[in-house]
Length: 152
Image (cartoon, rainbow, N blue to C red; front, top):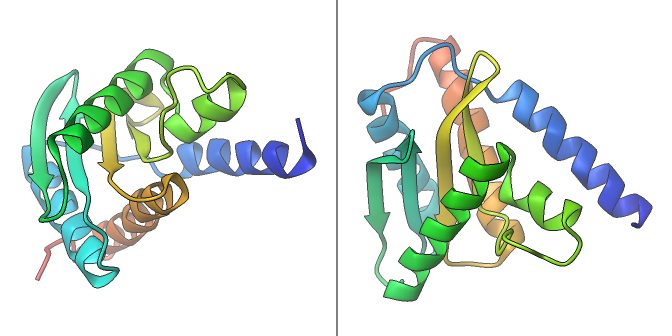
């Protein structure tokens, strides 16, 4: 494995430690999902977004330009996150054969160190899917700390 991939894996693990919630419910799923939609529209990314807790779908949105195949991909990515309790980007790199990773747009939904679900974006290049999820999580969690977690 190259040093670049090892560095990226370390970055992913750090982000998984950093991007955790104190609590999460369907209201948070709606707010976070709408923020991902807003950020995807700003980048003109046609994506499918899914947010689940314990395999229960709390938020789903398929933007114009996506297909049923993107929805299926998002579901498979969510299953990878649920199985491995890590980002699909991490699993894809770690498994080296690409088994199950499919795409980088799946990120674990973590409350105080416990994986309870997944946040998935699928539809554009894997790196862009991943960056959209992580960037939006950083934005949302920053807003939450400031007490401004309402999407306008």
